[in-house]
Image 1 (cartoon, rainbow, N blue to C red):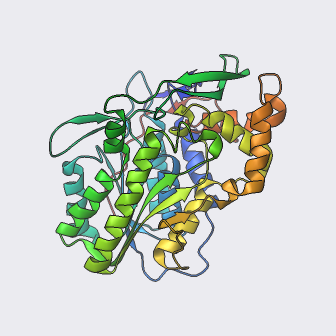
Image 2: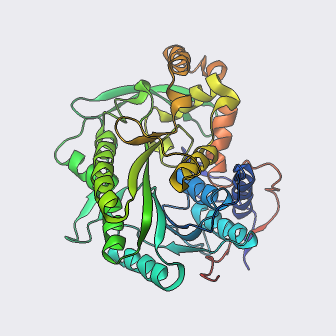
Length: 402
């Protein structure tokens, strides 16, 4: 088994390698942080998490196991280790999640491949039919740069662009020494079919295809519920997010939820919702101009008052499983972001945003926390890990055993 010392090397917020031991420790921390169930679940609900290895999808998987006692399938797309490079962080997180599930007596299978493909949907349907039975819950959490349409073979590519006019915003960057700088960046507006392309990747088409694929094969249980994870965010980031191409995709996702909700109600007495989560440092969010600055300032304003993804997803599982009523807003969305978007918090963050410069940022944002959170996405900056010691990088994908 190959062992070597792994040091963090990055290009901006993107790290070139991941640390297996750090990733495993982070998964264990999330499991321990998941609130214990208030009462023992009635049986083990069968669940599918699409996008199970990172961000809110990972939180959904771990909270589902630790809080709701699920059994079932996680789907993600991760790269294996090579002789020169480590695996992706999600590979190591999945291996650690599978081990914890096994240790706690949960039957969970993880499949690695293209969630957009019908081949993966067939594989999941086969596993349900042969091993798990009908599906009680589906959580959909996929963020991807491109998607191949299974019907046409066309490759759609998503973009992060404003709609209508160029968007200028403050953003946070770190130089090679880790020194923070607040810069103003400008993003050109969407053109041509940018909006349609982004909606095709990040909208509700694939979520709906998953539900239809399983429904057509009689694999949805009575009372089946499904949630697609989403985000609205602050007015400070509206121009690039909710009012941009990604926002158009999120609007399509919400429209899809309404369509699916009507269909599932008639078919199996089921429900479909979008779940609007609060801000967090994720591999996807750090790529969006302004989001890094916003989240750092939010942490500066709230400190420990920020609600971590694992707690938010535990709340969602309570609602999906009926441990407490499913509560939605007037647009049919579960809102897990009230702690972030209340007026007092947004006023405090806006005041910090308006005065944020390279000279003032260290007093306004929790930069140590933010910088550590970015590193932790890849298994670095985890307390208790000796980063000077060699670690095994050739971690196998978890076997699909009971």
